[in-house]
Length: 123
Image 1 (cartoon, helix red, strand yellow):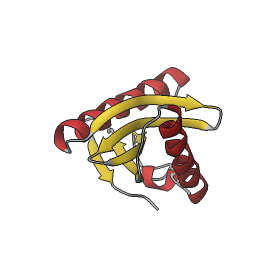
Image 2 (image 1 turned 60 degrees about the horizontal axis):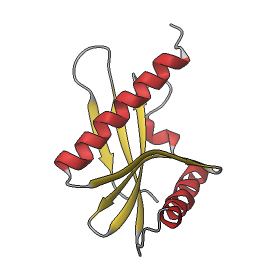
Image 3 (image 1 turned 180 degrees about the vertical axis):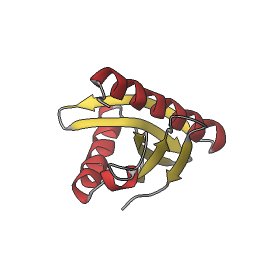
């Protein structure tokens, strides 16, 4: 089956909606920004968890045949996410002493509910 850019974009937006709801409603985090972009890249979600500024990468998949969402976060991507969250803080004049990068992995099968996993504090 061929996946179109529009269907990939819709799947990604679905995963970000699921992640934002779970992090704010179930984990008590505060959502500050979505899909923030600069020349170096993009942050899917920017939140606070108490005094900690959190960049959350959301990876949504329909299956694991191309690898798990966790495997999409390599050392280079993790380093870039850390740089981006500090850049976001600077751009928004958000004072913080601690940042964290989290992953929300969303597995959306064709049938049944999505499986959602929050991995706190990558690297």
